[in-house]
Length: 356
View 1 (cartoon, rainbow, N blue to C red):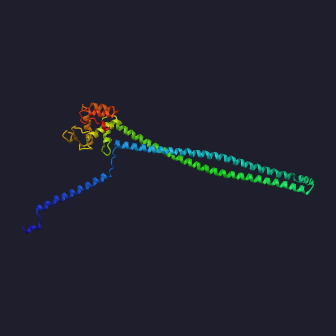
View 2 (view 1 turned 90 degrees about the horizontal axis):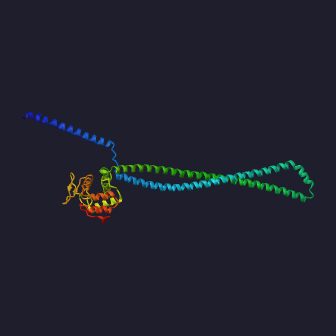
View 3 (view 1 turned 90 degrees about the vertical axis):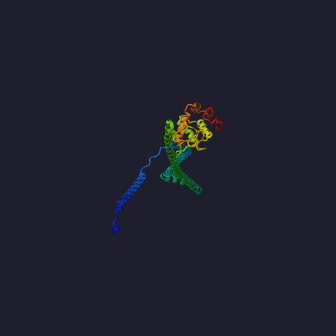
């Protein structure tokens, strides 16, 4: 009815409740999402344990730093020897200059003592002596002679006094100069010694870091197994070289140059993962694993991860058909023996010695 049009119907009133509930639920959900994002951003991130690759890289970097520090330390050591030699030479000069100064001062004191004694003698005996001298004068020439003698003696005394003073002044000047040289030599030696102490400290710190990293590397390698192998991946990924090492570690075979070369050459001969789409399967094994797909008509598999691919390869090698390969890898001293063992096995790769 027309009169009822201005009044909301029951269906209209009942529909508003669900809409309000849905809006409130959406708002609450948004709030919770925002809260979770904020909480996740605020929460400290757990530091991922470094992989074996990272540890080996750090060890290599630390060894390089230690080698550079050793070179710097050798250079500073040579400078320290030179600085010490310079200091020893200045010390000797300082000792000689002080001896010369004491000698010059003694000579000056002696000269002044001689002059003082002469003056005292002339003062005490002057009247008698001059009377005797005058009484013995026979002519004016004698007077001139006596005066000339007196002047000569006085001049000689002055020269001796001046020379003694000059030597004393020069000795004091030399002593001050050598003392300044000594201070500079001491400062230079101390500076070089400080550099040596600093380098020794840095070297000790790097040595401690290297020992810690080496210990962690040995712990990972000693643990063996798949976990240690996967720890060798860089950023979760392998290359042919690191995968070869990982396989050896996972199977507890010696990680020697011959073994690494052999497994790497085997990967190249098979061409898995990097040269075809048999993902995570460098040796093209046909071992079935959950989720793996078939790559070709022979039954080579593409695996779902590096972990699964390593597991499949290990299972295959241990299935009883590849004892010769295992023996060669266990010895770890002949890459061509590994290649020959692969060629003699039913794996299908053939002898890849030409790649070694």
